[in-house]
Image (tube, rainbow, N blue to C red; front, side, top):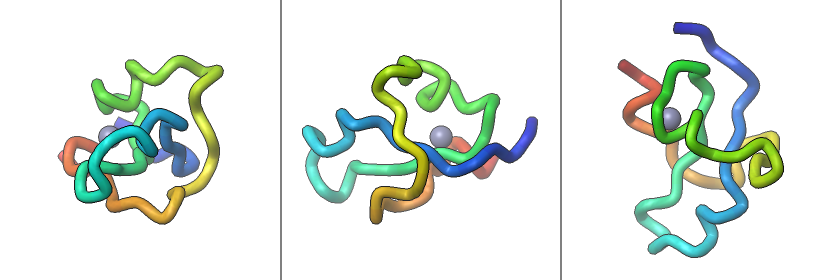
Length: 54
Ligand SMILES: [Zn+2]
C-alpha cells in the first residue's frame, strides 16, 4: 500500500454530496477503477475515501 497524490473522479459530482470522496492510496479498488482520463488531482472538497484508510 502506498500513498499517492490525492485524486478524485470527475464522476463524483454525479453522486449524492455525502457519497463523494477522494482517494490517496494506490491499492484502493474504487480508486483503481477510475480511468486515468476521469481523474483529477486534489481532494475536490470531498471526504476521504474509507477504503484508502485500510
Ligand atoms: Zn479510495
